Figure (cartoon, rainbow, N blue to C red):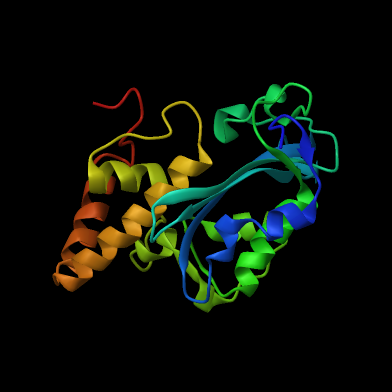
Length: 233
């Protein structure tokens, strides 16, 4: 298949040999990037407060799936929204205009429906979705995933009553490496979430989970959660 052409053949996706290996209980790391198809519309009230008249609306722009047992990227597709993109949110998504242009893109581009069908296939197969902050991803994709098929590191690395921790901060703290320096990358994010999940299992097995989690929050509060930013020391 020409990578710059829009793939609309559902059969090609659902019979992909890479996907046939997935069975119930198989862990897969998943991440998605989004673009905006509707800008926020707001106005100032008489008291000077901002009143939102219309919320920004997101659409799927890229999906990546990292097979945990083999540590291979098995899906990395850009997704062409049904509606016109008004903002590629490049700073956050890493997606630019050319990426979603079938005539110019070097990526495989699929339809929103086929992106959904890929994920629905893996859901129906009983795969376990590993990721960070998956609630928003599933909501935008319009996919309902049972709790027993979700491993979310944003909830695993969370101390009751405290703030949730970003994937970037966790990766910096746990592995001592920076990520997402300029833009997000769904493959990098999916892999990082899986690695964090593995580290959590190790810490729990070693009986040091509570200690490490407390160290995480102590360090976050000490640095005002600024670890990993370009202007941090």
